[in-house]
Image (cartoon, rainbow, N blue to C red; front, side):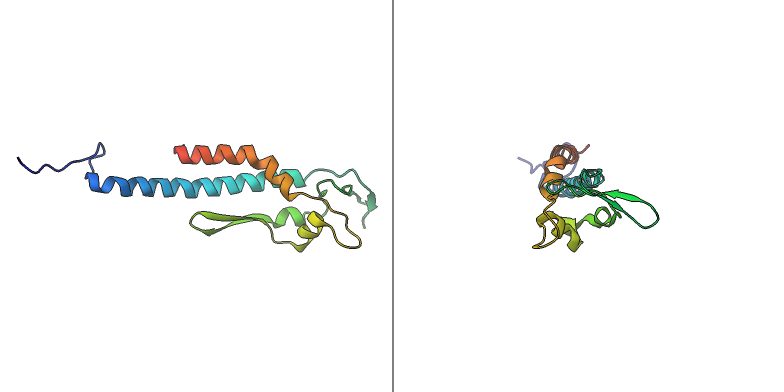
Length: 143
């Protein structure tokens, strides 16, 4: 009996097929992580762009700022918190989401004296959950 070479439907030798499948899976997983991270940032920026329901402050130049009430998501003031929101890819399959601002942590947990907690991190994760799932499913399906 002659020794036949088995080939897959793509025409590649059978021995190469698993490596190709792994490479495709890895590329899709990396795309899924990037898309999911982008969705989290988008939803977080929307969440942090809301108007507050707390105290009113006069700013120089006659502008008025309405702060968030304690317990609410922080109201947008100068935009620094929103600009600090982002993500970074730590390694091939790990992303870090968050804010590079110390003020973000103060707003999340409050301080001992002046700032009452205005939690936003868990709320942003909850708000972005469905969009993140859709992005991951879409990327893993190869859409």
